Image 1: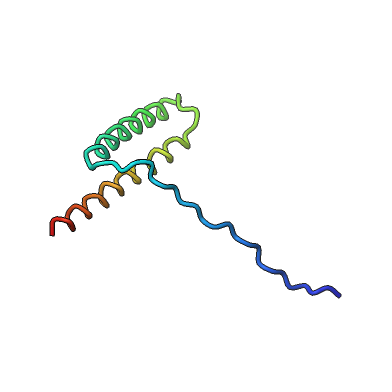
Image 2: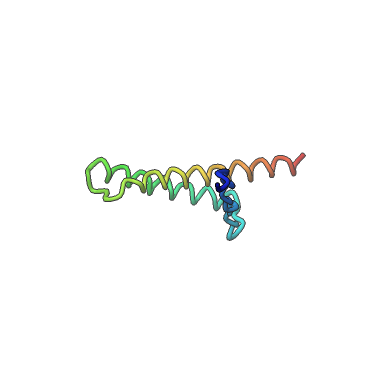
Length: 83
């Protein structure tokens, strides 16, 4: 009889994206304003039934959250450097 115990499947290691460039807080704020505008337009077109792919709204919200996280991290670093 063959041994019925199974070996666990090997998991692929997580791959994180590297930042392409380091942005200043001002650049991040400009990008945040742009993303908020795009999200507002997408929400309007979704309400009117014109948005073909509503998954775009989720992607935009996550992009906004990433930029806000980067802004908060940059501000935290700036405060620590001042002290």
